[in-house]
Length: 333
Image (cartoon, rainbow, N blue to C red; front, side, top):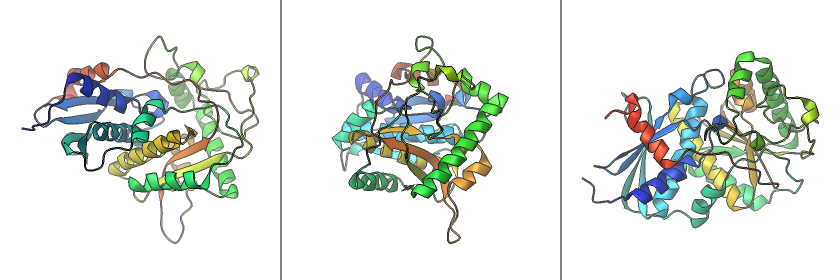
């Protein structure tokens, strides 16, 4: 029995912090449960919100849950506890992706700027300016990824062009594939209808000069609707990768991704996630060329820059995320 006490307002704040994480198509594919005996928060996969065509292996789902795990760790440390984290703790419960136990006093409290940033962070799918990113900030972003066991690399200009071409090919495949296009469209909703998915105003304009391969959630929206804003001539792109490609690596990649995004937010940067190239196995392999016999596995392509904040996608409440687990049969003790 743990001596740690956790009141309801703090519990709801912790879960709200986790739920603020990004997720593919804003599916929010997680459920939370508190084990009061050990004061441990469990995060389970909400597989009913998985993307059968876009993410058949569940890699993006795991990355999304990893982002929520990082936010939860930051929030737990902010309140003064040590976040004792385990990934895939019970092999016989494959939907249980991670646990965070509230341990003793935090050995190193979360930096205040990360906790503040997690409430402000959200993707911006709007054009960024041409202002260059400071070298010191880029170094800090790479260190943030390394802290979580991942690698963040910013390719050369030629490498950036090659990456963008791969992502463009993936986006064209997605819009031409009727199942994937329909799946993408299903997650576009008016905000008053649901706290899941993408309200149309968050999608941003399409880049019809084809400088940046933004996802067309509407799949074949009328091009005349392009309030054609000018996207940056030379997008700043970074690739997040891991040395292996197991479920634990996907969860670690999500934690690394969210730490990178929080550090970027703290420095006033905007970010959008260019996931399309990861959705086709042959294209994903091309995102990071193998060198010296070593193979890295791309887990996310991130576009960074200075620009408009853009509207945030809605989130489910902490009470909804907790109550849902109690109703789910897979969450039985």
